[in-house]
Image (cartoon, rainbow, N blue to C red; front, side):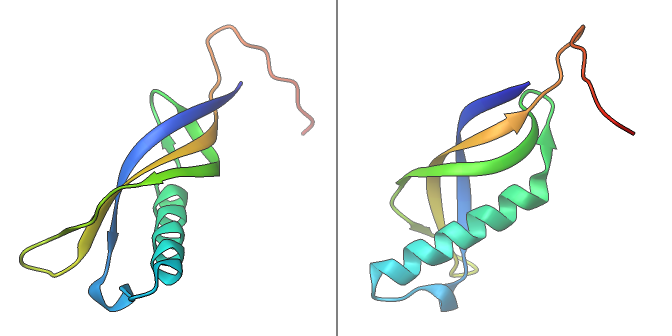
Length: 93
């Protein structure tokens, strides 16, 4: 039913969100990760995405040439919900 998964995604931060202080940058990366996570909703292999539990690693940012945005590789843990064949779910309607 509920699975703990470790994923690696790329997060794109717009140039105006970049700041000299690392705290604001980490906050911008986390907010963008949460937005992308909520928008994706599900995958065939992992099921429905429920929540991000930990942000494990933020990699070195790479500037995209034409847009000026910065792409950060991010590793995080999350909880997913997947129904397996033959599994019985109990619920109230």
